Structure formats: structure tokens, C-alpha cells
Length: 261
Image (cartoon, rainbow, N blue to C red):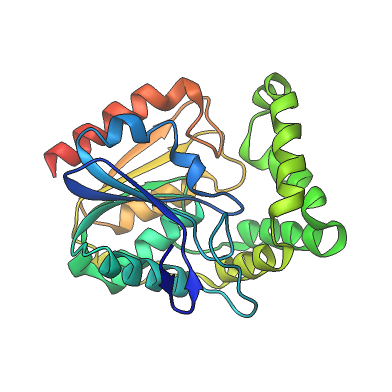
């Protein structure tokens, strides 16, 4: 595990070919991409990683920022001798990908943004404040209970209740509340809506029609700003677009997009 900017960054590589970097969302880790990697790694050198404060990466104290997340990735890719790559980011990871495309354009071949945002409007800010408050007052258990209905539909929660309870108990033991608070603060400070117009690389933007955490209107705004970007809105889908019912469609969509780049 390499040390980047003074912390250990956990990552997993699989496959050969042109590099494809996978960046997870808030309170998640590289396991998010496990359903996609077997097929993606047939054609690409996939690198999935844990952001600082997440998973098995270091969880330093102090201020976090989206710029720091993207800087960590920039240095990690230098360590791996990767000069250029495709990037896929989910939610927070999509914000990191946008920052990479703005600040390190020479490293970016294309971007795929899932359930993401370029700035925090009043409604999203209120949501982040509630999530932050849940962490401060009740720790990870309260946070999990607060965020779950924002990322999954009621039907999915009911169908997967036992598995979700297992995830909840595991993360209560492993998650750093301080790191999650710092990450939420980083999200609330994030705003690149006046910068992403410079992105000239191919961009695919994906959002769920039923997303109550980051509504599809925020994806539409990113689409309007990034010239030539492609927008896909998934019906009957909430924030977590990576549900089993969508996986084959998303794989075909992403692979075609990357092939055409």
C-alpha cells in the first residue's frame, strides 16, 4: 500500500490495457465496483481505490477537500506510472473526477459521472447538514439510518433488510466518524460549476430518476455545462444506480462509451 501525501492509500488493480480508474462515494469503499470489475478488466487495467478517510486507506485528522482527494489520486497514478486514464466516479467520486478533469486535464482521457454534482444547492446542503448532525449526535449507526432511505428505494431496503443490517453492524466497527464528518464538510465546500465548462474530454453522465439525495436536475446541469456530454437518466432508479437490475445495461453503456472515445 503506497504512502501518498503522508497517508496510506489502498487500491486494487485488475486486468491489462488502457487504465480505468474507479472512485467510490461517501462512506463507501472500493468494494462498490466489485460487480463491474470482472467485465471491465477484460479490456482495461482497472484501478479501484479507497479515498482517504474511507475503507482501508489512512484516516488522517484535519480538513478534507475534494481537491485533496483528486491530488491523492494524481500522486497515486504517478506512483503506478499511469500518465492518462479513463475515470468513473460515483456520487462523491464523480465530484472528484470533475476536479481531476479541471485541474489535471492531461491525465484524463474521458469521464463517467454517476449520481454526481458540480456544486451544492440549498436542498443538498440541507441534506448534508442533516447527515453531519446524525454523525455528531449518534455516530455511524445514526448516519446509516439517515442516509439509507436517501440512497435506496423503500422496495430495495425491504428486499435486502438482513444484508443491510449486516453492513450496518460491520461499518459501525470500522468507519471513522471524524473522517466522514470531514468528508461531508468537503462536499459542502465543493463548487466547480463555473469551471467544468473547460472540460473538453468525452463525458457520460448517469443519474437515477428517483434520486432523492442528488436529484437528476443536478446531473442535467452538469450535462448542460460540459459541451458534448451525454446524459442518461435511469427510470425507476434512486441514488444508487449500481443496483443489480441496472448492471448489465450500465456495463454495455460504459463499454460502448469507452470504445468510442
